[in-house]
Structures are given as C-alpha cells and as structure tokens.
Length: 123
Image (tube, rainbow, N blue to C red; front, top):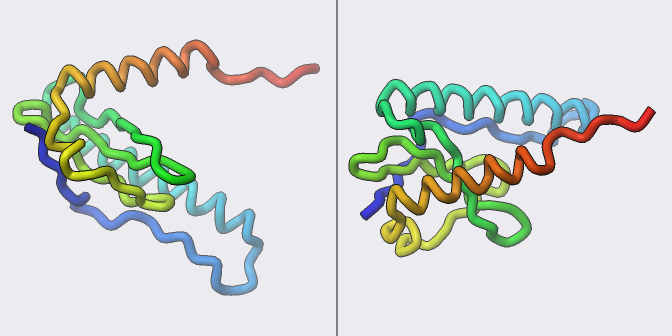
C-alpha cells in the first residue's frame, strides 16, 4: 500500500502581477520548476537507493496531469508535485499502487521519450 506526502519544500509560484513581460515570467517560472524538481529528485535519491527514487509518474487529469515523485520504494511513498495546476488523483488510486506499477509507468514514459525523442529543426 503506497502513501503520499506533501513536498518538504514549497513549490514555485507563478505571479502575473506587475508590468513585466508575461513570456519572461513564464520562462522564469519554468526555470524555477526545473530547479524545484531537481532539488526534490536529489533529496529522494539521497533518501532511497532504488533506481526509481526521484522518478516522476503522471496521471492524466483535467487539462493536465497529476504528478508524483517516488520518494522511497520500501514501503512505496510518493511526493505530490504541486506545480502547474497542481492536479491530484484519488487517494484510493495512490493506496492501490505497487512498486511494479510504478516501474511499468516509468518504463513506459522512457520508451515514449526515446521513440519520439527531440525533434531536430528542418534546415
């Protein structure tokens, strides 16, 4: 039975107040999100020696995804990633997850990434 916890560090916040360029604010928010996830990943890997530590799993919700990071595998513990729209899944879904399910989800994401990869610009 998996458990889910809130992150131990506060996620970045997107703030549209002020007169600065919106695209610059979005770029800064994306940079902060990347730093936030890298910090959480490093903490998870320091906490657990599993190859799954720090991996992100996603569940489609609304117009985005509910995202969780693997904190440890024995017992399975996830950290809710409260960025973007901060979607969440049902508690029963989290409780029913097994390490094998998470491993399959991570492998599926890796395979999709390798299949589609990074597009090269057409010259």
